[in-house]
Length: 216
Image (cartoon, rainbow, N blue to C red; front, side, top):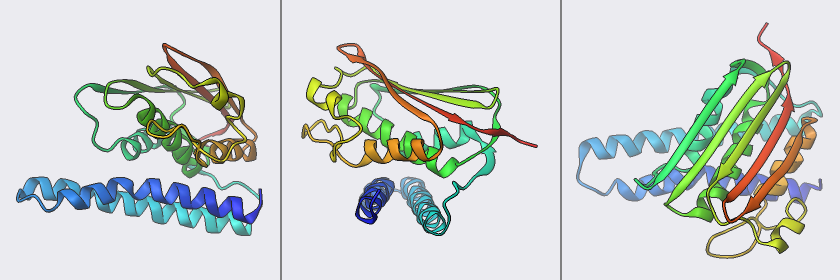
């Protein structure tokens, strides 16, 4: 990956990380103390995650080894989903499930970006009605994450260039962004697998498989 690709991927993730903060800032103009406090907390949350993302990028620029830490993988996934869809509608159902090992040694920041990108793409595809699910299973040193949605599926021309094109699925534009290629590169760096399990009228299903170490 060239420096230009790295910068584009980082800029894409930073923009998306700050999206809920920008939305919450607009809501702060409402004259409701409890409402303002809720969205002020979201701004701090989004900014904290963005700062952490930048730190990971700086660390990766000075080492060839993937960073890792021990943390609860379930918390990481829920955090990513919250950032990707900060204000779900009443007709959108978000499901997060986990089984197996919880506290595992893995690059949690990279996983947060992976799930964030896939869930955000799913939300853009299905809008405010339907189901987005993230299921994680951590067993025997392998973490598998399945991201599914109940949208109409990806068009053939998108599927053919899914992991190599320079744009990402969008409900408003049938273009592809750096999210999926960035996710694919991160998974490859971590010696994992990234698959489109199926896509069609009943929805889309991606899977990610990564090695990990149990908490010592």
